[in-house]
Length: 283
Ligand code: CAA
Image 1 (cartoon, rainbow, N blue to C red):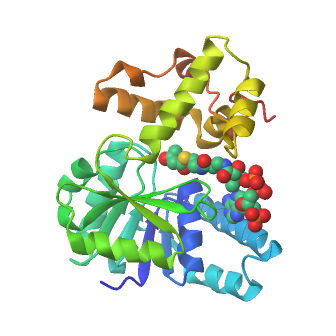
Image 2: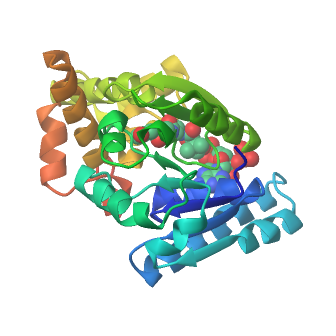
Image 3: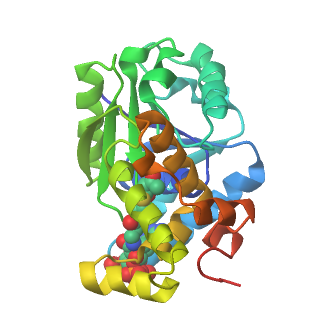
């Protein structure tokens, strides 16, 4: 199936990164959010990130301009009705995502593929509440989207082969690499990454090391581009905690219990870079 017009629901960190890479790859993009302010902020972020790529010689100035022209915005979900592919990248709450799909469905073409960028919610469950579980998939981008090479493709129990193949081809056209995951808590990346981050928080909690020594150990000792605590701040400590809770509940194994220190930071509102304070102080 040919994909031309792509709808992105949610203009936050993930949504604007997704709009950026699709527009740069030549797709027409229609991005929506609940306020004009978020849409304008997203466009400014995309422009800034494209300028960064131009400055580093990764993108030509003319390609940047063409990409910006391919992105349109709207406040009305119904305007996404003509899209061939929808990528939902809204708040990581199941009720919010379900409400978006319910509002969207009456306006969609029967052939439109629905996807969610969820990092941990069951694709099978989200799909079962739509009118097209066979054309529904998990489409999980990594942050920062313009830089990270991987996109996780997650099949729900009912996802058909044509949908999987269409998205696989889309990922190829984006110049990225797809990995295929079955629909189990955390999929592949977060099933492995989050317990490592959680273990780093336990290492801090138990006084085995301090923030600097833990991060330096993993950067210099395991060649990770960021230390696990720095990465947790980058992802958002609330997101890390919520994914650990999904792993803990979904896999029913105490090895996934969230570290009490992670819970405490989230309760304090120390969510990492986005609140200027997490394991590091960005103020
Ligand atoms: N848009 C465009 N380009 C960007 C960018 C953005 N938002 N952010 C960084 N870049 C580019 C820079 O321009 C630079 O380009 P060159 O290589 O051409 O010079 C390159 O990325 C590296 O950036 P910097 O030099 O500014 O900084 P850095 O070398 O410290 O790298 C980083 C930054 C790419 C974020 C790197 O630290 C890194 O890879 N960190 C790990 C990120 C990671 O693990 N992400 C996955 C998180 S998990 C997830 O997303 C899943 C989930 O569900 C939670």
